[in-house]
Image 1: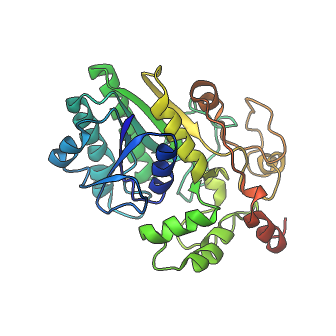
Image 2: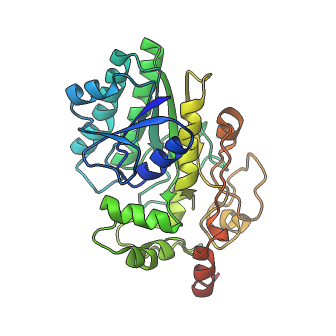
Image 3: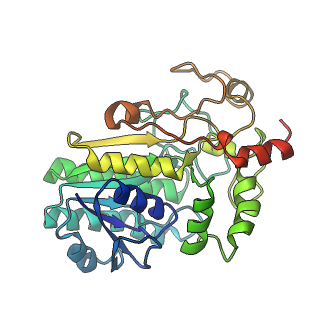
Length: 319
């Protein structure tokens, strides 16, 4: 299958490109900078330029749309909406014009409101799923929700198949991930070793949610959700290869929280009285990917608890 990936040079893009190539797909990256992945055709361009994305879409069966302002605080509200909403609309329009069969959109768990914000919010129930009310509390979550609705409109009005994947706190606990982040420029001039020690090994914290990286709030506001980038890439590949879905939205996350405290304790401490839709044991995630498992075949393969990451953290972080 011929697949066009917008934003393929970004932090998750390298994983997606490699996953598609390994599965035998012909892959083109449409981005402002070239990806650090061999075997991929590269087209330089910007998703807010309809003429450029129009040309890029021709000859492709599916488009994976990753390009975006990747989080709050990185742009003004107007800029965020321009790139994440208008840009998504232009990708959908170009795909429709070019006869592309499907667009797979990279959404975010931020649409539900549990994201990069500093106010404590109680969920209606746990684990969080696709049926939970969406009430984003920052410009990033708002932009992703509006983009999801635009995807659905293109399906309803024009028959363009769309799949939206809500990636919950995408992270990289493997060495390759550190290398990709450094090469992509996301690491802000850190070396791989510096990134490994200063960022990755500090991101998974105790239940009190002490977050060492300046900027983001406590992990509680992300529901301690974490998705290994390799599992996220799996979800995108499965969405590309699915032939039956016309439009749908899926929560994508790992099977466990990023807390060293068991889930039952987290719920009792922070969400007392919140009803449970299913039993949660051990370190089970507070976000459910059951729907993605049933309809896409998504099964996360990676747990940070089985990595060198966990060994390092267990020696440093009191429970």
